[in-house]
Structure formats: structure tokens, C-alpha cells
Length: 464
Image 1 (tube, rainbow, N blue to C red):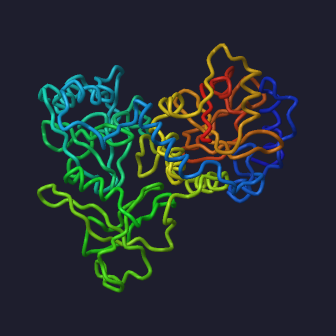
Image 2: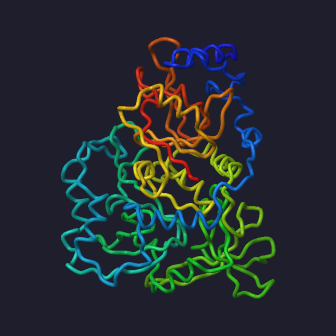
Image 3: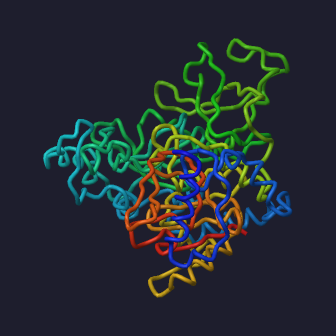
């Protein structure tokens, strides 16, 4: 689209938006294809340079530890698996399973676009085997040995609500990362799946992704020092034919990995000298499912730190932009993440352990949030949007956006989003497919031709 048409379109978006006519003129447009976004704005440095006191610590380590403790105590979506009793009742286990494993209430389609028959749903539910849960359950402690899906049912079958839309697998819930401690409370009928409870989520995961040990062994490794925190988007361990389970293992942002201090300096690791890499200690699973730990290499040129990053506005922007352009992945699908996974992984690299899903994040009693209801009018919502600060999280039903700054007084966000709708100067909307982590202005975004994102806003969360 020619540049002058971009300028006209963006101006139309603003003037066509109720209450927007008084705002400043839109910024100059380079032809990125997204109205209001220039090529320069795709760099984190562009935004950081405009933030006063960008490197000031917003929340220090003791305050973050207190926030995490508050979330564990008050937020029902978080699980304190370190302090579970030695025996759980069937009812306790069913509360976790029922939260994600209900019978689907709407029609579903398979990967070929064929309607999923009731018999297929029956078979999936039968494999969940909830009728086989005993009255007393002994929790089994373990660790994830790789990035593994968390599913709503004990199946790898991908299902969709539209026959032609295969991006959002409705059985995909979230993911585990290498070294995540879990408690396993149930197994599927075929033995290929286990129901795992982690600190932030509980769902089905492949049985072979979990290695079992004692609670003391699991948490001693999780707490071990020294360690590295992964600050890149998704770096991988070094390729090694000597240890296939640890070869090119994906380590996502915010993952805390202990260093292996048992080896002498210069001792080869998996057939390679370690001086150009960090020697990590990662969990592995033997043929019987038992947990042990082996060294693996992470190149020093891959982003990681000796501790969590300071929580500053500059780091919030910098970390968010590490994901820019990553493919949208519902429930951490496609080796990526979705909108809530994106913001939680960004804050996880600074030590904040947020709830997993948008609904839980937006209403968490452990977080500072301002809630909005239908009683809140348009003008009040726009005023709140104009007062947003870098790092603030803006929620609408099913979606979250992270504020990165303002251009001519107008708030901009970075978010992991399938697509956006904008006014085209008439009553019609222009739909732009994104399917990635994207930078967009906030105020012109429309839910439908009459309702803006701001009018749909349910909550603003401020990590302070």
C-alpha cells in the first residue's frame, strides 16, 4: 500500500474512533503494512530511548519474592506443590482434572476438517480413566525432561472449532519446560499420559516427558546454585550425538537451570570442550522412568544470566521484543506461546511467576489490578488507556496486551495476536492477519464495527 494511503487510513482510524478526534496526528508511516507502525518502531531501543528513567528498578528481588509468595497463597490457579500432603483424596485430584478435562460442549473437527463423532469423544474420555482414580492417591514427584505439551485430555489428537482453522488446538492447554518440578496424580488408561500438577498449571502430559524422583531430590535440583536464567526467546542446547536426550533441547525464556559443578575445568562434556559454553545440569529419564541429572552445554553467546534480570522498564521492553515475529502458538503450541504465555514468560525472566491464563492473570487476587465492568463508560476507559505505563498489562476477554510506550500521546502495545481489526474510514472494518508477536497502537483496535478493544477492557494489571 502506498505511504500516503497508510497515512490516510491511520488518520481515518483515529477520527472514526469515538473520542479520538482530539488526539495528535499519527506518526510518519514507513510501509510496514500495519497502520501506525514504522520500521523504526520494530526496535526495542526506539522505545527504550523514550522512557524516562528506563533502567530504574521497578520491583526489587525481595519485593518480587513477596509477590510470588502472595500469588502462591492467594491465587487458586497456582499450586504449592512443595507442601502437598503425602496422600490426596480422590476429590482433590478430581478438582484439578475437572478444571481442564470436561466433555466438549461444542462441535469439534479433526485436522482433516472432519466432524469429530461422539464415539471419538467417548474414546478420549475413556482414556482419561477418571473412574479408575482410587479414594486415596499418593502423589509422585518428578521433573519435566523436555518441553512438553499440557493437554486437556490424554490424547495427542488435535481438534478445532472450525474445519478450516487449524491454528488453535482446543485440547492444547500449556507447556512444561525442562526442569519444571511436577506432581503426578493420575495415569491414562493406555499408560501413555499422566496428569501432572506444576506450580502454574495442571493438565495431561506425555508420560515419557516426566522422570520420577523423591520430593527432596526434585526440589534440591530446582533450588540448586549456581544457575543460569534463560533470557533469550528459545535458545537450544548444543547438538550432541553422545546424549540424544540433551541434544538441541529448547530452553524457553525464564527457565532457571542449575550449572553442573561436578566436572573439573576442561573436562569434555558430551564429546566437546566446555570453555565456550555454560555446563548445565539437566534432568534425564532412564528406561524405568527414574530421575537423574546429566551435563549439557549452552553456548555462551546464547542469552542467559547468572540470575533473574532486574525488573526495569527497559528490560520489560527488551525481553518482549526478543519474541517479536514469533509465530502465535495457542497454549504454547508450535514451540511458541500465546498472548498470556508471552507476557508471563517476559516477566518470568525477571523472576515474577504469573498465573498462566488471561482470565486468571486479569483477576488474580495476588496481583494489583483495576477491574472494568459494563458500568464503566467509554470516556473513563479511554482516560485509563491514556494513563497506561510501560509494562502495564491490558486485558480484554481472551486476550492480553503489554504496553511499551506512547507515540504522540497514544499508547502502543506489543502482543501475541492472531489478527487485528481497524476502521477503514467507513462503517466497515479492515482485518489484518498477524499470527505473531506484534507491535500495534492500542486505541484504534476494534472488536467489531461498534466496539473497540478499550470498550472491551476488563482489567489493567500493573506489576509494581
